[in-house]
Length: 287
Ligand code: PDD
Image (cartoon, rainbow, N blue to C red; front, side, top):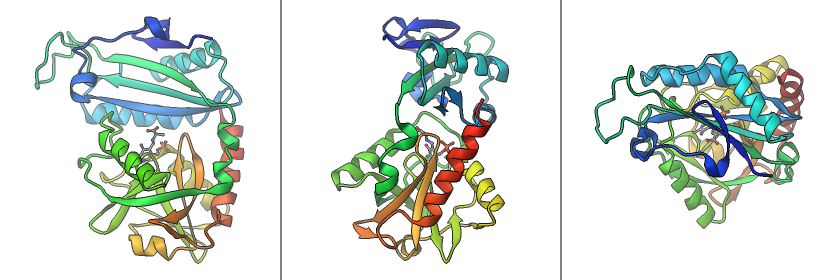
């Protein structure tokens, strides 16, 4: 089945969809994105992703080209057209294609944002064996720009981080700045010590994960203790357990850091329980 994608108002077969070579997303990484997961054909935390999209666009002075209802309609239509049971919807908005290359932003009255959405079909997304195994991570220096709270398409360093991890025989990298862990290359990072869940506080240094917000809420409802503060690599190495969260991985245990086991070296009880709660609750609330 050929994938149907959405480009600037049209649903098209993927091989017929195109954007201009002058698009500022292509030339300057001048754009933002969202990834929303789909379980049982329904969208997980759509409202959270729509809110963060609005915030990312506002921070970059790009006008949101569509209303939340219009975004929702497109997401649902792509799920339907591509018959997605489990997977993801990728959404990207760029400042558009002014027809030439110029550092200055184009006049928004003339150049309209480019909108692209496509589905990624991932059967078994919620039941991946990785959740039983846990991830191995390495640590790398965080050399990204200072506005990581904006979900821009500048993903070169995170891609390089994944490749460094791969080369080291690991699954992902945790980035550190001034000795403290910021986040994973495409996820938020957590440790557990003495039953307490520790994850970095919000700020410009990390992406404000939609899964993070939901997981912290569920953790508090389950009477788990949560501390939002920076933690060091040494604390992570000495933790009882660790995990990450993201829209595509949900809650995923981390069992190894820089070649040494974290805790027992197996997925821990807190991460395992939070994964179950997160999947149950977000499935119930999916739309
Ligand atoms: N990544 N931190 C970074 C740097 C991310 O790229 C992501 C998401 C997260 C987690 O955010 P959320 O829970 O809202 O997915 C944290 C997406 C999944 C991606 O790039 O594919």
